[in-house]
Length: 117
Image (cartoon, rainbow, N blue to C red; front, side, top):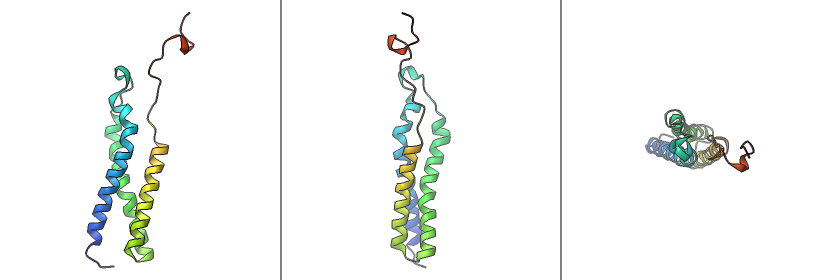
């Protein structure tokens, strides 16, 4: 367990996890950053609050699973596989759970139901 490449593998795993989580989150946050039609739904809070939390979670989740698997199994390759699987499940949970505000683009017109005839 005192192999010199464990620290380097952990750093690479953290960087890959943060990048993967951020890249999976970015298309969902695009609506909040650009604002849609006439920037009516613009919310830059996703850049200040959500982005750091997503990157931190993407970096820490695989590390915690890898450390736990290394402690229990004592072998580096199964621990790496467990960390990659945990990262995949974490990104899946992120993309299925986190969803920005999705209001309709136009709230007026005859199909709205509240428009005068």
